[in-house]
Image (cartoon, rainbow, N blue to C red; front, side):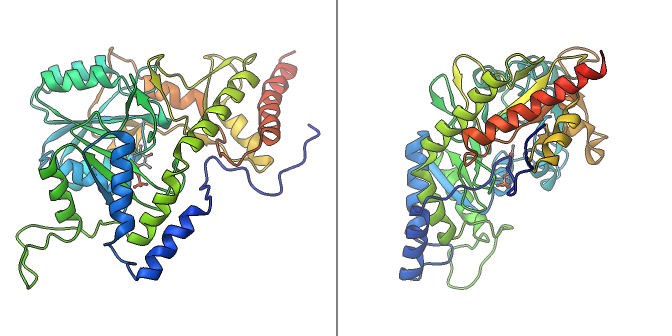
Length: 385
Ligand SMILES: *Cc1c(COP(=O)(O)O)cnc(C)c1O
């Protein structure tokens, strides 16, 4: 290859700031509301509610905190089973364990790379007393949310939607983060928009939102002294960071458009290779947070060959989330697939790769990334001649 190694790293997905963020942060400083109360917090929560179309939003210190409090709202206690997406970031699942619940992992399907409704149905037959389901929208692609919602209703189970990666994505025209009884989004640095770190719990229930505000600020009862009748947490977002979020919200649609362009440039640029892009349903619109590929079965080019090639040129790519049932920490947990011996998550993990999807990546840089990926396949062909 006649390309030079990039002097500054091409990231998978890094924060993109615009300027408005600093103005809102300055407001917090000027008014001295730099702690966990203030206008930025109330306005950010209002902005999010209006954007996703949900009644209540509570801004928290992370998406993980939002998921933790969602699990608490669902009433998960010692020994309670919770059906969870399997191929996802560990933060989807860990909060179940914080509450001493027992995650049971549900396999994925190939159409969205998300929880397989068939496997979920099977899991309810196997464990009918399960109280809650946590579904993630991987890489910003909505799961089969209507089917999963319906299965939860039929089984009297509470649905929690982990929309950490999918803010701005829609399913049948409805924003993700609204399909669960309790929902979480993340403002971590690598997500589609960021507050440096932060998250939001979304719900249509006033009582649940109030409870989350209460728990997230140390569960202080209404008394002049510090009165505690429940265990609380220090999970509230800072008003300073909420200012970053307000500035970022202005640019959410723009980020989504740029991410979408990146996805379709990869799709076009890689179309002659034995691989597919991460798929989505025709009646859903991802936020295209990360563009990923799935290499055809039997192809000698492995995701690791591509990842290492890109790394040589200072380009970041990343393996697909390693399924939870393959993680040593969760090895004793049950895993339910739609068919005996099936393991879609493990298959996608083995053949898939997340490509750099940073919206500051120019078209010219992306063309180089595409050429580098192509070169891996050419090299392999040469070897086999
Ligand atoms: C990022 C992420 C989280 C956790 O969000 P944080 O804000 O980093 O705590 C949870 N689930 C998924 C699927 C994520 O990608």
